[in-house]
Amino acid sequence: MQTSTELRALLDKIDRKGYPAYKDTRGAYQFPGYVLSIDHVQGDPFASPSKLSIHVGAKAAAFPVSLYEKKHRRTALEDTLIRRFGSLARQFSFQAKGTGQSGLLAVSRCGQEVLERTACVINEKSGDIILRFEVGFPANGRTINARELQKILFDFLPKCVKSSLFYQNLDGRQLQEIADLADNQQYIREMLPKLGLCAFVADGSILPRESGVSSRPMKNGIKFKSPASLAVSIDLPHGGRITGMGIKQGITLIVGGGYHGKSTLLKALEMGVYNHIAGDGREYVITDDTAVKIRAEDGRSIKKTDISMFINDLPNGKDTVAFVTEDASGSTSQAANVMEAIEAGASLLLIDEDTSATNFMIRDELMQKVIHRDMEPITPFIERIEELYHSYGISTILVVGSSGAYFQIADTILQMERYVPKEITAYAKEAARDFPRIAPSDALLEKPKFDRRPLPSQEFKSNDRIKIKTQGLDGVVLNKETIDLRYLEQLADSEQVTALGYCLKYAQKNILDGRKNLCQVVDALEAVLDKNTLAAICESPSSIACMARPRRQEIFACFNRYRSLKL
Image 1 (tube, rainbow, N blue to C red):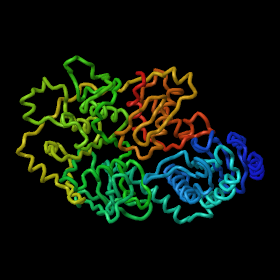
Image 2: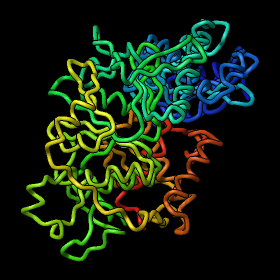
Image 3: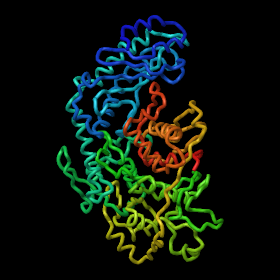
Image 4: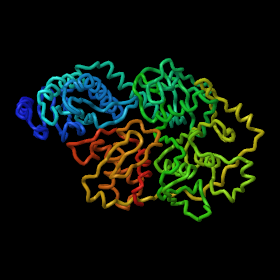
């Protein structure tokens, strides 16, 4: 390892040389209290920025072990350090001048959710900290401007590091509050099944967001208040008792007029699979973390998925136990999405009538009289929803605006009125008494078959230059194929999308063998992530991508939308 003095001398030596001379700076350098590692140097001033990392030993950082000994606390602390470093780095970004990306100083930008990221990793055993970030190495044209880089590395960066990665320079009480919040959130998650709940929404939560393109809380938003009949109190590890609405396992309907908050509540529940930062308004909106949002997805590919629970006896005789199509209809895609969610381990389905295929959701009595059941290959969701819960333990929360037939089978019915929930179960069931009930379908004779065994592609085995490119939350390009992820509505960050691309690439190279089924493949991937962190799925430790960990359910969903996957 070299010293910071040697790095300064090297920069003086290469000043005003051609840009490729920056490559000589790669390596680790000892600075007071930390090690700076220059891991990857960009090829020119217009290329993706250089990748650097800061390594701080546990003794120097001096964070109490209690702040990172449990995984949920560790993730919360890592998230806090990224936000702190990022806020300081933004003050210095582009203060060093030059061409192209010159002067950029940036780290992952965290949203409202608390996610495990490659940007900061605290070793659970040693307490050592690694923080990864990007720097645009300055140049004039394509000539090195080492004086400006020295500003970044010897002036700006030490200020960011010392103010964000050393416990003595941070507010210890605030860090303890963040750890306590993580404890409380984790405790509620663990309590949900014990209380027979699939979700909890605390009184006082702010569910509406600032705008359609902002996930920040709406200023002066209406505070959530639970109906008395659904109120649940939980004694938290920190801060005493919390009260809110407990959504029971089973079938729950959310109804109400347009613009009264039905979809807002559902959206909060969708994102309740993640913990949120203090001040978000949804800190205590906690949903079963296996929950999957289900919708129609016209045009998606389906690969050997068993959709026979919902679609059978097709006129062309096509197999629905291992159904294959490159261009699914709305109803077929929604059927596949339900079955793939079950395969991924979901115990809660979240559905909005507005984004569903009508013929998948319901067939009313008149339609059943005109088109006999024997002539309709689709068994609608309303005929299977009770079976999903009673036979498979899968609850459903469903937003409906026009389909009153679900009243008769729902366990709980919520009406949203001006963003205020009211329980109307008894009233709605009384109103539905005079209407014919849609009978449930005959029970399945066999459980769905989940034994799809993906094959490895030789294209990956012999090619070390497969590129991954993220398209925001819309998709990821892997080896020239764009995997469409637009309708995975629970993805919270584009860095999760990047991670999905690397998961697929890693699986192709290291896990797929034609013997493991998809569940076993995802199990193996998660074991790697749990043991070695997200960085383990990057081939080169010197060029680790900015990633955030996706859930198991999104990993499955990405595999299912990967058209080149061979089964």
